[in-house]
Amino acid sequence: DGGITQSPKYLFRKEGQNVTLSCEQNLNHDAMYWYRQDPGQGLRLIYYSQIVNDFQKGDIAEGYSVSREKKESFPLTVTSAQKNPTAFYLCASSMISGQVPEAFFGQGTRLTVV
Amino acid sequence: KQEVTQIPAALSVPEGENLVLNCSFTDSAIYNLQWFRQDPGKGLTSLLLIQSSQREQTSGRLNASLDKSSGRSTLYIAASQPGDSATYLCAVRLTGGFKTIFGAGTRLFVKA
Image 1: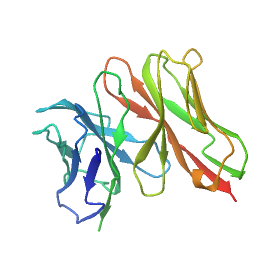
Image 2: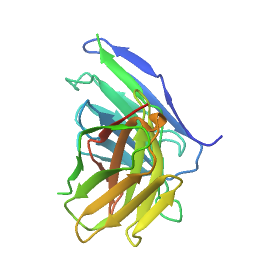
Image 3: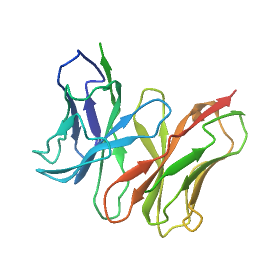
Image 4: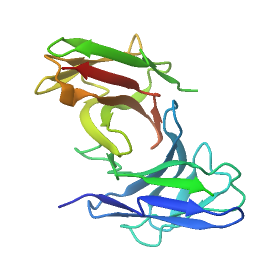
């Protein structure tokens, strides 16, 4: 089955610790995205990537970092510089152009600071 | 700056009722508009996508319309069922790039 896999489903972070969220897709999509979702708010874009080895900051990139070494993978690191990291994180992918422009989402990772 | 607003924030209806969810956006220069469903603690499932050149899309009991000139989209759900209970989000993909702006969603509860 084609899709997007996020892991882990739940993640706990101690103060001052860096953690990495995994996102893998087998849809052969060019573009990948990371969003943050907080209660009562729309999804906010953290980073996105259109091609391997290239990525751009979204609206709330501070305290986060990403890499895109493979087309299938787009891991997100939440660094200690992110002061309020508790949230639900969603990864998505889409074709850049063509007949299937819709975005597909993973099942999310819930990050909690302990 | 593109802003996406969804009204109402929450909606409770009895089973069998037809209902409309609203989405408005401030900039009509969009590439497409997509409606998603999100169950609690889960990811987003795509329901319908409307390209900027289209007026509506239908899938089963769902119908989504798009009026770019007025900056509005509606999601019509016919004969609602308890299984339709979820949060529905609309998202606008901007032209000239790959950013997608999301609304905060409408939480729907269908009572049996």
